[in-house]
Length: 169
Image: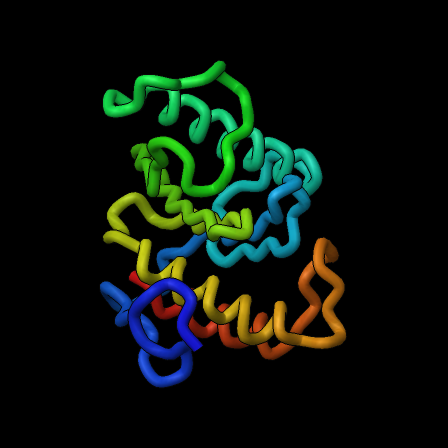
């Protein structure tokens, strides 16, 4: 089954752009800001407890989405800065880069937000995030034991995502 274009999940995930693991962190949030999944691989420094870290990341996403929608030069009705938008409304961002990391973001039509923080020289990861979302749908959403809105506890999903992300460049 296909959710975001491309091919089926199993046969052909997007090819990693280089060898080695350049991923630092992966977040999956629901539309209400609840962190459903958080994974670390090469996070060099831990500065906050996990709850503060999740709140900070979701707040950053909320602010960036609001800012990009407000600055959209093609939209006449921009609304108020800080007002939540539905997925797909207005202008959105896909990634930003600093001198120490790159944050890549994807929001599904259902409001699931997937964030991957990587090395700043990592290439375009939009197709990779779509692939991770498709894994989420196949292994988590379709799992009859999963209750929506609760943290993801699916070993097959964890293992598959871990193997895939470790191969990203």
